[in-house]
Length: 189
Image (cartoon, rainbow, N blue to C red; front, side):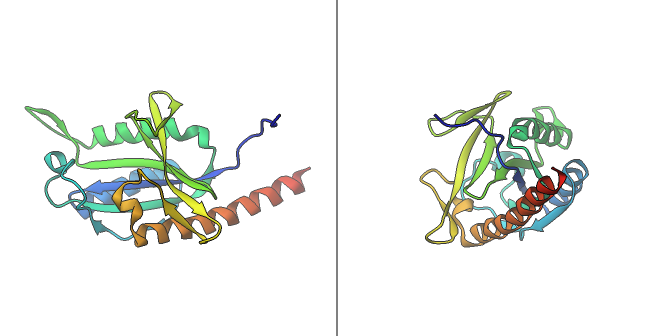
């Protein structure tokens, strides 16, 4: 029988999609005000994988990943996704057709073993996390390769060398934070 244990803390990341850099910057500021300092900012790249967001964001879509310095409890991911959905709506443009998002904000968390992305959509490879939110593993860590690897259903931008490099860097930062937290807990006993 396994023993129920509290999970190790995780690192919050957020993927941003927008039509322009100023929208990304505005959301970064709002997210940092809510979740604390950002310790890794990925480059802004063109997102050209599908036309799924074109109606809302336009034909030129930019992608950026940000990683937050402070660790968190993985149980908080559903609440974070609900918050980022409200942030998307608060910055949406309103017209006669309703609200049109100016940014897409997708939170997830990173462990030493995997990267989990939050979504509101159910599918065969997604697990229910609570509060109407599902999670899916986008990357898994390979000890042999000493790197994250994409999985069968990973989104195309999670498969890129640049993105995997960012996640590997964030994993190193996470490991350092976990070591510091474990040391602190040990000294508090």
